[in-house]
Length: 398
Image 1 (cartoon, rainbow, N blue to C red):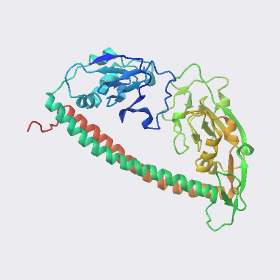
Image 2: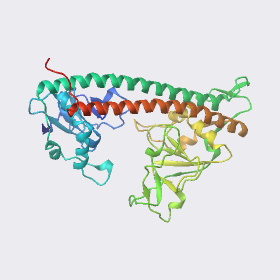
Image 3: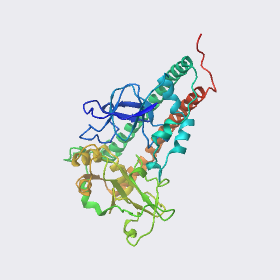
Image 4: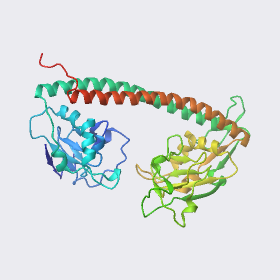
């Protein structure tokens, strides 16, 4: 292979490189939030059959043979093949676990997100190649096996999405309609909420906000111990906070104002509506990053509020209030301008308890399906490794 860097083709389709899907047109998926530059004349040309490498994520296997012609970010390496090989075999070979370990060894940088694989180091990694017919036989076999596994994974992922949708509908029904299907209803006057039980209130969120604060920024970087720094990546889809991988920041005179305590909510300032974390119990001393906004509420069951913020009603209303492109900016006033359905406090407790039990049942089913997906993906890795390294042989030439 040889590195190439051809630019000046701004009208070609923009491509994206995914670790799981390879090189595909950027507009074929809606989960790539990287913004395409307004001027793409500096993007690199990718011809069909070129090998594309994300130099910062090579150690994760983020590289692939392209089945498309187009242009891609100038941060990527583009290589063309200079010797006769079966390209799909190379696609499997260079993405397998053995090579990932070598990319990891050769990558340099201060921290994981900044590791960088030099193109010359990559090009000098030796490859052991079987005869061309065997390369094709292995690649064709792996195409078939991997396609079968991917179909099984896709089925489990579809079931998970259906379970998540069901869970959100259960939450929305409970926080907006209550647990008694026979109670008289009234119009809320809010498009995103619809009818609610008589005796329930609708309040603007700002009326029950005790205070809010934009997060802490530590200009001196991370340290070995001290205060955990809650980031957007530490927020789960359930509104929980997971600090296992959160870095530490050192103590400063002003840091005490940013300490989290039970009942706090931290909303993400970017990435769309509905991304938040709820401090449901004791956590180790932690502060929150500058792209989060902490809210404290008064006079309500915060467990109930956590479920309300997961509902279609809240996500729909706050989504209608924010502006911007793919990575929409969310301000404190966007949150405070929403409305909240408030049952009597006793019913808030009952609804939160009901949803704890119901959502735990659904989450258990999701966890089982996710375990199946993880097992299938590990099986796929092992199949590729065994055949690409010759530990198992594919019959060919007969």
